[in-house]
View 1: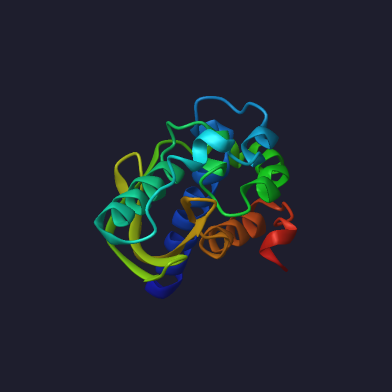
View 2 (view 1 turned 90 degrees about the vertical axis):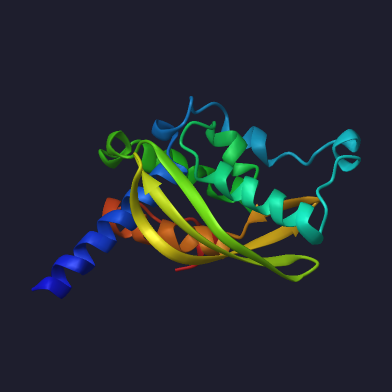
Length: 177
């Protein structure tokens, strides 16, 4: 019975994390999710994040925390997610479920970052909801795209698939079946 309880708690935690990560209910307004899909203009290229070294690790850590920060707008978080524009429809669908009201106050902790190539890093992190740890010792991937370190879509999709199965919504195509 304790294994079932533990599995249920983990499922609920992942669902809360996924919902908080993707729902406008967690942020400071929904806005137009499609705006975040635009590529940065020429001035943004001049401020590209470094692809290696301590400054890259700091950028990865900061961006990872922003994606999981429920106080940052959804468009800003989607801009820091690989293929973020491809999950905007899913965000809108999940936001309309009863789960949307329950998912608030997420944050992340990053315990370590290891840059594995000029375009990829491994991130060890945890996720909290209203200060309570929900997911501990998670491992994700950050990718370097257009001069910005982003949360890898595979890391995001793991949470999204659980949320989709528990809310009855369809996971975005980018997450596969």
